[in-house]
Amino acid sequence: MNIYGASGHGKVVYDIVKSRNLQIDAIFDDNVEIKKFLGLKVTHKPTEDQLASPSVFAIGDNMIRKSVARRFTGAIAEALSHTSAIISDNIKMGAGTVVMPGAIINSGSSIGEHCIINSGAVVEHDVQLEDFVHIAPNTVITGNVNIGEGTQVGTGASVIPGVKIGKWASIGAGAVIIEDVPDFAVVVGNPGKIIKYLNE
Ligand SMILES: CC(=O)SCCNC(=O)CCNC(=O)[C@H](O)C(C)(C)COP(=O)(O)OP(=O)(O)OC[C@H]1O[C@@H](n2cnc3c(N)ncnc32)[C@H](O)[C@@H]1OP(=O)(O)O
Image (cartoon, rainbow, N blue to C red; front, side):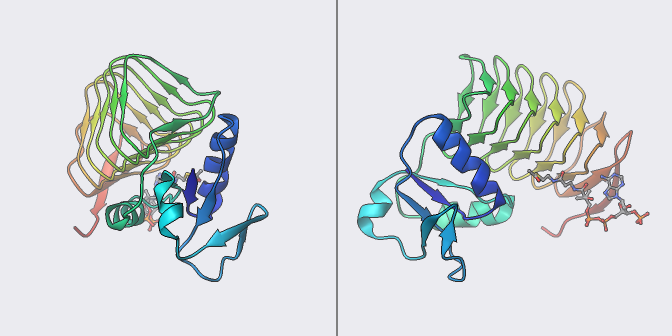
């Protein structure tokens, strides 16, 4: 398979692929200045043959990951998880999603495409995450929470049961979310308060 994104996030995705004993065929990156990644050659213009092998987008920024994924013409990898992650059999996970070391995803949850469930994050039962969501390291999403497309929940944040968070919102590191969050809102603190809205 291929890793698209020769970045810090890409290094952790590399470890996931290695933990599964999968073969890495190529590393892609749009930045022509990046020539090497963990000792491997970086490809800037993939060939048709390379595009036939499934790719995972190792790009931490949700908006950039979406734009790269949407214009990509090659095969896309199935969801990929580190062997140390604990994932219920009773969940759905879309293509391109990555689950980092030590993360937990419990029964009844549904994870969209190209999401990141980062190191040590907990996604409890019956959670629904739309595409391109990032749950940052050590964050806790409790039961029956819904999170819209492209939202990032910052490291160490907690979301109490049943809360709905809109699309392309940004939850600050360490925030405690106890009520619904609208689309594009930036929320920080305990209890979480809206400080601004991101430009649609
Ligand atoms: C493997 C990995 O590395 S995954 C990476 C995961 N990434 C994260 O967890 C990052 C989470 N991001 C944050 O917490 C950011 O601070 C954000 C998104 C909430 C806000 O970022 P910005 O829009 O740049 O806001 P900015 O830094 O200008 O701060 C605005 C105000 O909010 C406050 N603020 C920012 N973040 C927080 C926070 N997490 N908790 C409390 N207050 C905060 C600032 O102190 C500032 O207050 P002031 O106006 O009184 O001075």
